[in-house]
Image (cartoon, rainbow, N blue to C red; front, side):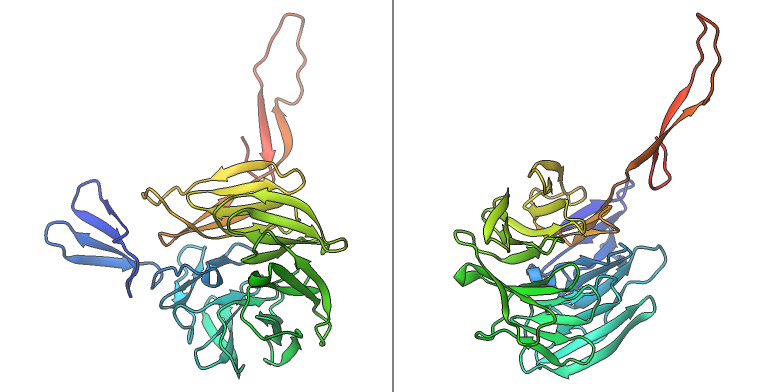
Length: 361
């Protein structure tokens, strides 16, 4: 049992749960415990970084990997929630930036890619990879997939590059424009970067991060800086042209981080809060707290930017997601716009701020 909520009349109760094979939201009669209704995705959130919830770049599709498989939720009211066919529970996955593709591996060493639409999912790639990893990264365009220190085509499944080192599972990343790819080696306190177009995977940059231990890496959109996400310290960025540290954003005991598409904002999440940093100054611009858990402590499962950096997604451990949207003032309107008054006269007027989403305040 995770949480319970009663209706105002005290006749019905909504129950949420976790660590079970069902873990949906369900409603029961208080009088006799009779079952009424259940809804929401099937399965519980899993705690691993490779299975964290994700959102498409336009903010319209949300993906949740649970112990029953990968669920797809559309933000538009009335569209059904469905599970990606052939997807398995407790498996790592990733999506293309537009949410039109999803990739994962099976215990039988199959690399699978599905095409995602409002009507359902269609398996478009099913190829033997010879190994089974949870940590996968798909390029924004959905063309390539990183699995450990290897890169594959998400179209035909062929091996495109294999870094000259022991094959291993590792968290990985593409740069925003897809020209760079890399992976972390936590035990060596290092991050490896290669060029996407190089089939020989010749080393482009080896960033030594000690005393920090990366559990995740981030590329700044300028393709010059790479970030080491350390759970005990925060995010340390390095200049790949000089190998020097260029900015430390402290957050002890964090569980995920994300940088905005324009490189100006950084999200870091941990227990009970997410912090938004200004990258240029390191200043904390805002704190986000769980609004709907009803629990004393919740952990961040994932953070991400969407919709041209005007939306952020926060996934919390009690199996729910919060979305925040921002708007920017673009003008001021004064009504009436023109006034001719005699000396000593006054007239009421109204000032409105116009925002980029069309709203006024």
